[in-house]
Image (cartoon, rainbow, N blue to C red; front, side, top):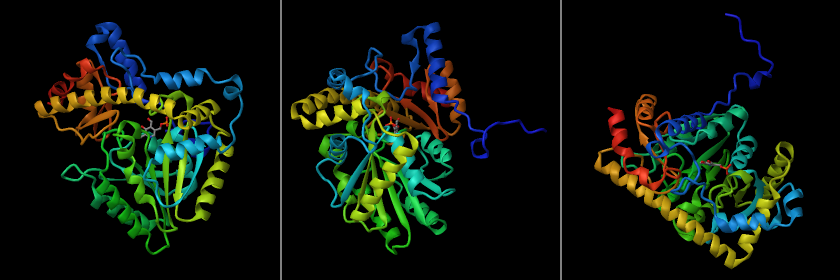
Length: 413
Ligand SMILES: Cc1ncc(COP(=O)(O)O)c(C=O)c1O
């Protein structure tokens, strides 16, 4: 067979951007037009919606953006980000239990930008980046786009806790073949399962990595994706694990990815920061320089208005309290939806992934595509994954949640 003619360079061949999530959402919208909105469950959208199906927006954040002077919207930001923003991002991401370490930050367009720079600057070309078997699809897209691939470990053990044993095996296995390892770990409120590592599990993870780095020969980079941290418990509680990232060896770097998308309902403003944590001032300086350079080389600078607003929120106790109170309402709504789903799953004997917090609940299903198709016929539109189905409880109105688990059980049969 003759090979299809292509204009792309060899490394870009065969890429295609069809996104199953958006395609399924479109199908759900068509079904809603046909059968009526109330009779269709669109569980695909990864953003928080109110019960009347409107994008949930924190009013105070919205007002701050609209009240900005024109120059704060139109002007460039510094390549590394506004200093007040970087200071706010560090303090808001790491919280009260900051690690004993040198900490530097660089602004990126959302957490996605931090993932890109971390993969590009800290893993070797062709190396494998490690993440869990339940993972957010774009981890692989971003790795592939940057000429890397991913390797996986089993996320859960038989007790539905973090699978430390498989994690350790896969870390050590990769380190036999590679001089460095980048590990993408999304917690708390993991996408797609809603799992959060406990304090003890975080302690064990860092112990495993300390052991793996002990010889000093290998470089270990732990990327902690906290995209959903603001929906995972109180401010202090949800950040307590950060303390484990202090006093690590020089060849271990932790990168925490802060994002304004969910916590500040600013998805489209594309604002976040990568926060480098190291016991070495030199490595922290290198982190800043390297990633600032990459900013210039990939997207130049980030969105000034979003940075200014975060600086303003962090700099004013009253405003910050207002934002937190508004977000707390959303968190309660989300928690209530998840509780209903879990309760109904228990009642109908549906096994779900261990959910603690966040936007998504996942159901392990062996033949996910078939079940997904059957559910569509019932007007329930989920996201099929390799290991199961993802339900975005963040975007389903509370009144529609309760009937889902039983229908999933039926569809699995
Ligand atoms: C697990 C995870 N990490 C990171 C992100 C990045 O989002 P953003 O680039 O908008 O900050 C998302 C967004 O959906 C996500 O689900």
